[in-house]
Image (cartoon, rainbow, N blue to C red):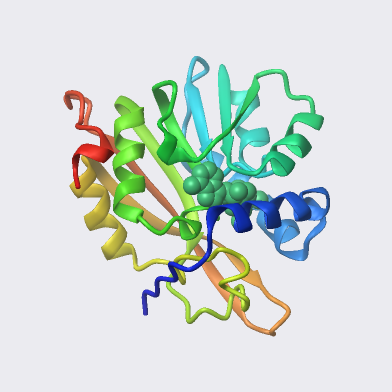
Length: 223
Ligand SMILES: C[S@@+](CC[C@H](N)C(=O)[O-])C[C@H]1O[C@@H](n2cnc3c(N)ncnc32)[C@H](O)[C@@H]1O
């Protein structure tokens, strides 16, 4: 069942990511997520001249894998600590951008990728409107997150700033269509084992902004 927890302030969640940043890549979950980047690249094709946005990039699980294939990656995250770890990896064509996605994006992108960040955003419809607005016509999304679960994946959901217990693909597809995205597809990309003894499937959601689409209204206009 889809759940929504509005109580976590962005600051608190961001501070937690800052604290965990140095150890992030060594977490058992991150080690299991590491192959996701290669699997995504096997299914989604980027152009050598592309500018790609990694939403909720963290320490760069996706950004560092995508960067060698494209011209430029912008790694967007609210957590300064996560982005500092990413910068220390020294990839020349990754720019870090520390801000909330709802503050407005400074550029247009050929593709938006994301891993395990969607479930931290309460307003999923607003997030997809931001994605659609930030994509060039014909641009694509490649988003990884949890299929709907019962809240046991994170356990301490409020402390971790979890806003959704995963997602039902049909619901996300409706939201994406309403935002102006088309050709939506889902496939299972990983299975993550947690210390509670259970394992959880993750999806890859793909889609495109209509190549003929004009400029979409600002997310803030679509109240
Ligand atoms: C679970 S981590 C995933 C990090 C990385 N993608 C990975 O898979 O290892 C989620 C990230 O999304 C970021 N995030 C959450 N909400 C955000 C927002 N509204 N704008 C920008 N970043 C956000 C968090 O700071 C955090 O680094």
